[in-house]
Image (cartoon, rainbow, N blue to C red; front, side, top):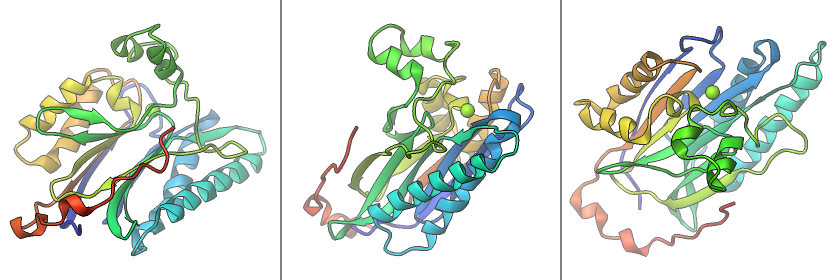
Length: 262
Ligand code: MG
């Protein structure tokens, strides 16, 4: 199904503790992506900027394919590895990357959600936000084994340790999820600086209370900074305009395969 116009809104803040904002983001018509950089001597901002610079040209591809996105992620990894190797002082650097892309798949338009690291993509539903991505982080593994609760993960001393990121060789595999586009789709992308300060319920409450949906990104970032701002905070909202009623006739004909869910 061809969906309506995609609108986006983004906001980012350095927070209250860090000296440099190492988050980077891009939002276009068919691609929205967040990268949360890490590295010594503020090299994280270089890594996240390289990731965004490598991925953002995909927004001009039409149709865009899953393969093109995956290849761009591999290119971004190579670029960051090369940049790290050229550093005289040997500062390692890396970045998370997560996003949504409108791709042509099985002859129809789908969303591709991709993730490497602990930035997140949520679907904004009528009564809650649903995390679509799986964090590649030490605390996510501790939550999965039941050693700590999701609430404890938000303040755990190891909450910043990611287990997968761009900037290592060989490059890490991206998690991917594919599903058909719908006329009222609404996604939230964020760096961990948001979810370390606000619970999923608090995030939803902010979005629900905001009369203009696009202001939600700015408001969420402000709330996270006010709640402690221990890390850089970045929020992107992606929303598809409601389609005319007659446009919903072919909803059930679209295949819903999952090509990879690791
Ligand atoms: Mg972060």
